[in-house]
Length: 143
Image (cartoon, rainbow, N blue to C red):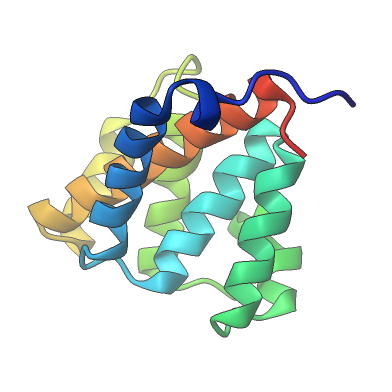
């Protein structure tokens, strides 16, 4: 696989904007566990090997279990995830697969029962951000 253009080198302000979103999310109320579940699951759906590798490694360093990571793509069939995590994973999948009806009213209502408005914004922004990163990495063939 060949590397393509280096966006960070050619357009550093574009990367600064992306890192500003990352900085916002790092300092939001979103837990590390929730943050990594979003990043890994979206990256799995998008087929971004670079991001899957990076975020699973980071998640393990922050205390996530290998078993939960192994079963993340089958989260609906396991009892390993909390109701909050299941809601976050549903939002992540529906937003990542936006062309398949987007974020459903049912999923959104479930999130409203579990999270306040600020938390929902943080979850949505985390999903948007990792999807943008996946597209950057895949398009530039970053390794």
